[in-house]
Image 1 (spheres, rainbow over the protein chains, first blue to last red):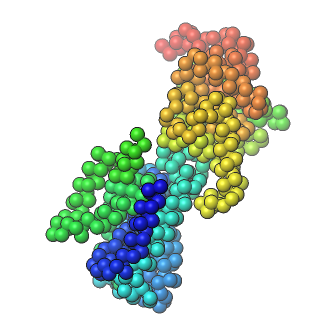
Image 2: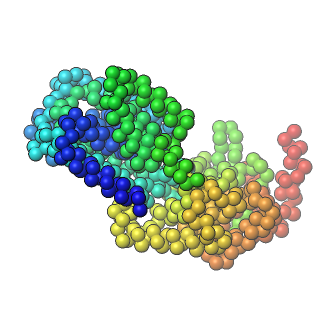
Image 3: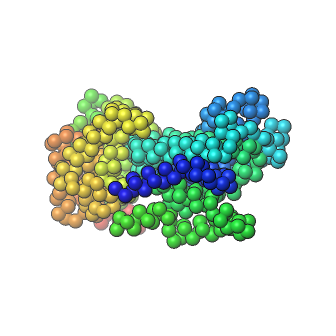
Length: 302
Length: 261
């Protein structure tokens, strides 16, 4: 009984936060947390549930962000057209990468995803005539959501939708097939599961959600630059999933909250953010491979 | 001929580089029949099992199921066409519940699609209820109903073998391929296995291809045995006859060793 009550209280707090007169600084951080919740929860579908490693999540994030920036510049379309467009474009890139890459496993898949991430970064930073190069592109705020206190609700709604979607997927036959592939792919095939299409589905959905997060971030920071979508961002999302607990849904959510807020709390130490993330990830893989939430659930069951 | 046999293995040859693992092996299995596939270690049994289940592609020859070619197809397609299997090394998803292990094998045949399942439509829920009932019915055959919500890893090896059988049986397979089901079982469990395989045919009319080392099992349940030695079929006869065949005796005892030397 206590769990629903505390969740309800948390929801109420999240809804009231901007009204309670929290400063713009705090709200801006929380919007970034919502965006990284979308990224971590979607990557967990690929990593934690379907068991496939990907270091390309920031590439799909960037593809979504640049889709909205370029569409706004060239077509004059706004957020509500660009959001589904960014998701579709990122999803199609996910399909194009996943079709050949998902034949590979483990380290090989990781290497291919790193290559893809690098190619996307190079295209964003070097194709100046189309992407604006290192200077990036500016993006207009979303009408009706110009103030951070308003944009907050947009980001909250999309993060909540992502979590609901991820919950529905993982608690369905689709999620069951993902777990089967993760645990024993040969057996999964032997009992009649079409493992290639299952893995591809996870990959495409995750890429599309990351693309949606990209559209959101572009309108939040009102611009895009290639350096917002580097492999270090991909590695940070992987760290959120691993630290929180792969395949637990709430774990990556927790990981996104903690690892997005952490650099803000570190003050001057924030420039060592990636060192700390790296150390944390190594510690977690050795000491708590199931992540914080995984270990906690495990202990409670005993 | 083709109307009488459900599974037709036709001239299967498989070589790995210069090594001939299977050499022109042919046999058939009739509907409702229990056929044993035996042979000393390295005789090509596992290679044949891997070809029948789509893990390997034969160098030449083909396998037909009810007239349709299955050799060369991927294993998920072969499973969907009605060939269920168990594994020599015992294979379940250890972290998943027994119910989930069985349900996953039935998943591809459900009328409601994956989208219906994600959206929790009534049609998908109804299918899930039926799946669970079927799993329960299968587990009841082995007296394992109470383990339905346990993770598979919590069961003993003998019980896990039975779950593997329940998993295959739940899909109402046209051919059930049992790959050394007695391996690692204690003698009382071997008795249970014999009883269960016989029940499977009596109650569900399942056609079985049984790969087995334990002769007691083969003698007790098989109508016919196919004997392989060095990749060749050396006998195809009822168990009593096959086990007294001089070539089979030679393959299994002393004389065979002289050829290695």
